[in-house]
Image 1 (tube, rainbow, N blue to C red):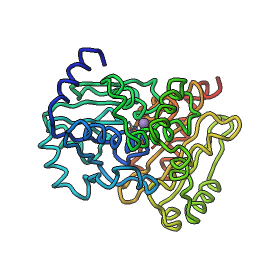
Image 2 (image 1 turned 90 degrees about the vertical axis):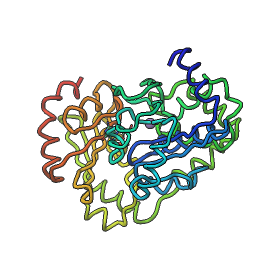
Image 3 (image 1 turned 30 degrees about the vertical axis):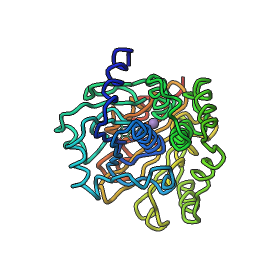
Image 4 (image 1 turned 60 degrees about the vertical axis):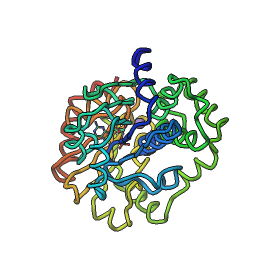
Length: 338
Ligand code: 5GP
Ligand code: MN
């Protein structure tokens, strides 16, 4: 985003507008943190701003400042649609292709207004009027901080905004440990703490939310964990029945795939989760080093994401999906054993 574009956006934001902010489907901490943080900044400037999520988000995010005002498109379609149709400006955050909004894709594609994309995923599509895309960034939340910085408004970051931004940086960096965490990320986080983000409380609220049934579901996931040493690969499966037996709630499987990746010598991990309602197998991929799970997911499982973290899906059964996955691995043997 160059200085001319920043000037134009500053101009756009100099008069009160109706603004809609949209995270991706099944929003995570970064998607919810960035939309809520930016919404509160925009409200501070005098705009009427609304967050519309395609669908529900995990319970561990249901305390974030401003969260109660989020409209869910799938359960409040008429209100959400009218807000979108009336919008002078739409921010799309933490995704870069309209298909990532699921059921909202059509209405967005048919709404001709000014779009601003802020995102850190690879290979952005070309739908936005203004595009702030940077794959080197730890999180969209870090980009929201830099966006506000570019607009010369860091002093407008309140404690609530700092909290929202902190959450997305924390969750997308695995608590400041993934390679995307830079010294700049730490400087941003340090400023957010100065501005009122209560780091200890945030960590407790997000991570110390286990239930007995969730821990037992993790036990099932670990029992189902399979290692393929030849390909330095490990994968987990969870069937709909296993989820049902453990009172599954959105977000309960968060982080499971990272356990598979934490096995010594493993560079590629996957989790396959059956979703009977949507008739899909939802997949998360993680890798270490040179192996690109963004490319892997794009090429074989209708997905994408980042070099070392991506997601995708499959429309065949769980056993068939795993069979397909295993059958593809030989063609990556050399990349997986560099
Ligand atoms: P997760 O496995 O945590 O759901 O997602 C890992 C990363 O991949 C996130 O940045 C997420 O936005 C992205 N991602 C997850 N599912 C999909 C998908 O179906 N398509 C694309 N393009 N990206 C995805
Ligand atoms: Mn993100």
